Amino acid sequence: MDVMDGHNDLPWRLRVRDPHGALDLAADLTATGLHTDLPRLRRGGVGAQFWSVYVPDDRPEPQAAVQVVEQVELVRRIVARHPDRLAIATSAAEVERVRASGRIASLLGAEGGHCIDNSLVVLRSLYKLGIRYLTLTHSRNTAWADSATDEPASGGLSPFGHEVVRELNHLGMLADLSHVADTTMHAALDTSTAPAFFSHSSARALCDHPRNVPDDVLRRVRDTEGVVMVTFVPFFLTDECRHWGDELYRVEDAIALPCDSPEFLRERQAWIEANPCPPTSVRDVADHVEHVREVAGVGAVGLGGDFDGTEVVPARLPDVSAYPALFDELTARGWSEPELRGLAWDNAMRVLRATCG
Image (cartoon, rainbow, N blue to C red; front, side, top):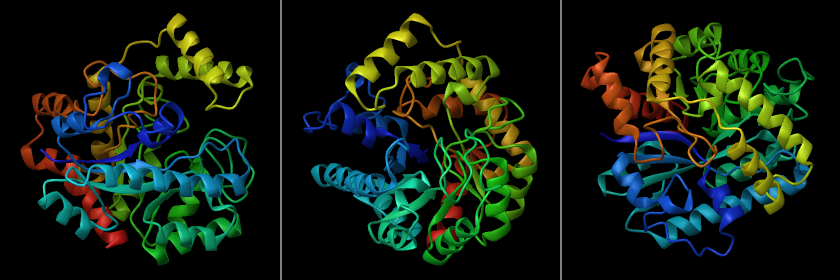
């Protein structure tokens, strides 16, 4: 079964761990600790992947605007190295053409509105580079939008934030509401004329993390014929893991080093190994999928694994090869083949087609 996944952080992981491009994605890289490579994408049935062109929000916005372009170029270099396996896509029609050729459609999503440097001109330029979603915030507020994990400042969206949403609609670019505050979700939905879109979020009712989608917003997703692409990150699956993740964030803050520095990565990994995350499994992900279905409808749920954007993963979902394990779990719960196809592909494609063409 073909999968369209809403969020994969391999590009940033490669920027940090493999700056000289020594790793061959055509090989199985399981032993390196990466979650993603071409053989495992094929085993997982991935037919379309939104690659996150992420830049941390701890750097000045002009620098972030430069680095997001560098991340786009990194993805394009990866695609150019593997033209028999990958191809860039910027619309639903192109995704279908790439899939028909037997390759994986590679879409681009920018994670965090800080990368537009408070400029609609930069936003338009990112669109021209092929980016097809903008996550309005990451873990910190922008000057124009409130993040789920920062102190409220704009009351959701500032007047310029509403301009950003309108410009996204005009361009044909998805306004991604993962990472934003509830007030920002509602403000964006009040302004947007496009279907609601969450690239990698789960259900607040099952895990009370501010990154997750509350039921009142899920009902608005239903009403806009949008989609929530459920993430597999344990912090967002159970409250036990949420508490563990909160402690990890405190440890990260205390390290007080750039988040992509070798020293930061070593200290964080040492803490994780000494303080293991509480266990989660594919069943927890299935619970979130079913909750989104229950509140927003079967047409409103998709998959956004966030592989290579997390150090910990649920049991039976270790990497991008594992989507069939989730389908097996849902089949055992009574999901039909058409419902699974909607989850895996059709629902996200409908929203992509409605927004980007």
